[in-house]
Length: 244
Image (cartoon, rainbow, N blue to C red; front, side, top):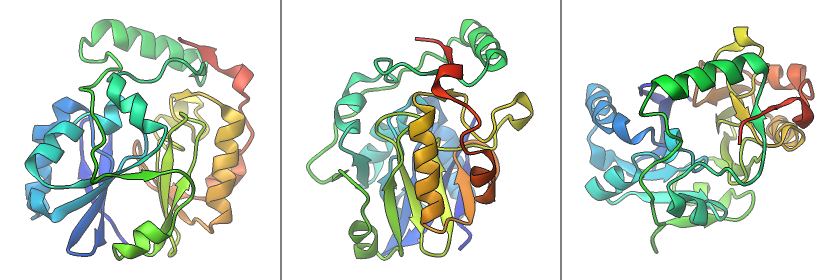
């Protein structure tokens, strides 16, 4: 299955066919919404085609335009139970420690934060609604009910509320559970910031146990799931450069 890819400023969202339309994996920064609408139209789709949003986690570059898209079309949001309170804060969670993956990334990110007034790790707060679906554990029934052969996996490590979507055919939409972005900087298929590396590698193993074949990250290009096996355990939580 080849998903429809909608590019955004620093990430991309994926559209997966479901009953009567598409399930979208994540949103982007709030300022990405006009670009999203433009690229959605370029793909030949109307906003009404988006029936569901699987929110992999609450961070600003994944939940940023939830308010805009839920305003413009009656989309149902699927999110982990831990995301409920985190979304209401309008801030990336800073209460559980973690840090940047290495010292170089810490320096680059610190410079970017000083120079980019938009990079505040904040977003417009969002309150999950009665029609939205709360995920408490791995769940395949919900997807199959909407015509998708796959399972929603609870994959913490990047943050506490992280979800991934694993299709039976082997494609895994992993949000920030893994990444191929800036590999030259020593990220070893992790994202820039991680909370708990040991927990993250347990999530990688869960993806591998589901016979994941191709990983579709929010940041970077798709890559073989064998990379997760190859780099599993290479970085420890104690190696992270604390930021918060």
